[in-house]
Length: 355
Image (cartoon, rainbow, N blue to C red; front, side, top):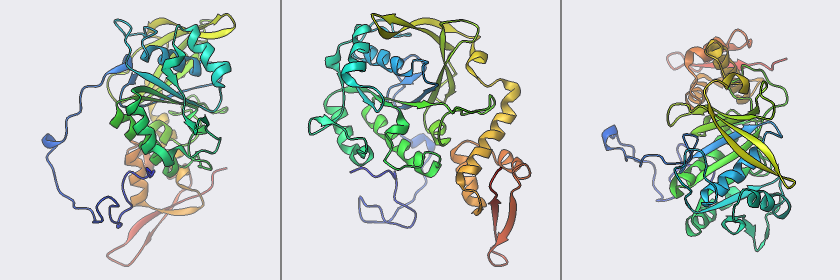
């Protein structure tokens, strides 16, 4: 079974060979060169990576994944494709939709083939609500390779994490998502995790989604979907984050009725709609980074002391600068102290509960 930890904890032997770590330095020129990225959805959903897709209910997130499924199986020409191409099968893991009542009609409305869209079962039966998928990642990886699955959808990703997981804690969410990203990389499949937005959120928050900022930090690309306020009936998909290249233009789409079934119709790209989708404007960047740092500090745990080293480690993992972290000390009422013996003292921060 696959552990959620990519590596054993510090000071413990590697379970694979029974020995401790053997550290060495390697020139970057010797690092393995990955193959160039290829995309299912141009510049937005790469193969071999985990992508986040988020938005409010009703903006067509699940319908968009059905379009991706029809595209990966060669039944629909997605934006950026020169022609239809059958990459392989699609696996849809859902907690919110019924396979026969919801998924099959949506796939057929797009011209898709339900025989090429698969679900995951346990002894031929649907997975129970508390099934521990993360305890069976080795088996999932083998099935993806054997069945030529090239798209895996988690709808929603928050409903498929290990039962009882605290979605607000980065130390819980990050290893789970990194484990998924590892499977995506090893299989070459495109992984897409859906996530709802918070009901109450500030326009300046860099990550408006539910749960830990790890949901934003781990994916190579994070896409947000929303209605266009000034264009009735039109929706847009914007890249909030894109680590594998320049951010693409917003992708426009409509949700049309096909004999009582929702269906996505793509309407091209638009460079000018970011402001309508809650995109971050340059003037807001400093406040956005501050909000991001505040959220990270709160997730570390309030009402307790934290070592400065652990804070810096979390900040580095989430691409937050030391300057930004330090800027939150006074606004959040954070206290500091030095612990340890003279000559070997370490800095600690106390993060108080926020009103």
